[in-house]
Image 1 (tube, rainbow, N blue to C red):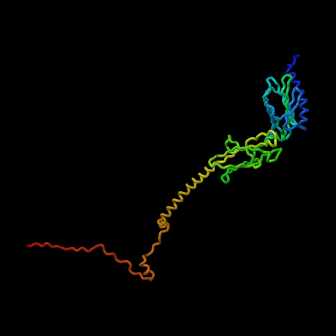
Image 2 (image 1 turned 180 degrees about the vertical axis):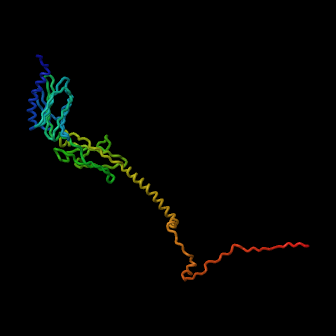
Length: 323
């Protein structure tokens, strides 16, 4: 029978022992685990508690609006040839474990419906007879990743840009002071961190020639929860330049107004002529004949026109010859 390699055999024994110990430790942590504390133990059999950010390794677990739990880790100090045993337990539900030799990895689990539960993770780094274990409990409040804020509106009021939105839904809190927001107005290099999260609105002086492309994201405040993560960005809402709209209005007004003004001036200048064309005068007899017409006298108003033909005087000349 071929013998096992010493390193593989020791790793196998360690994983088995770790699994038995982990199940008991995880059960204890789920019932009464220290918040925001990392339990560190090793081959020296010494155990102590430190803050999660005090170790060079990075690991996190988050629950997303899609009812999905995602855990990831990155161990910079993992020695070459060392084994990394990862054990993840969702309190009162799911347990998972695996051995890796890579420094980075991830694990995810989907739920039929959202089930906010604490999650206990344990990482065991082993090389020969030396090992170090990290145990940490993520509470359900800190793992939740929010959906982007909804009902975002953008408008210009009294010369100021006004952006408003609704507080995102959370399974674990409704306290408006426990939410942080970041606002992007189209300049990705100048993200605005809002200092009054309970206001749910932002205003600044409007730039009439600027096109605004507004989007917003949210996360739980670090003053309320440990290790929150930003939500996805909301859909972008655009606001066209108000100066452009004003110029178009002016252009349309001028285009319609100038012809009307010119027509009015033309009508005033040529009022009499236009009036005569539209309302010709009614024919009336001369004033000197109105008196006779009123009395019924009809004098001979017509005089025979002088004959244009004149009588020609013909003189006859007789030529007499002397005989």
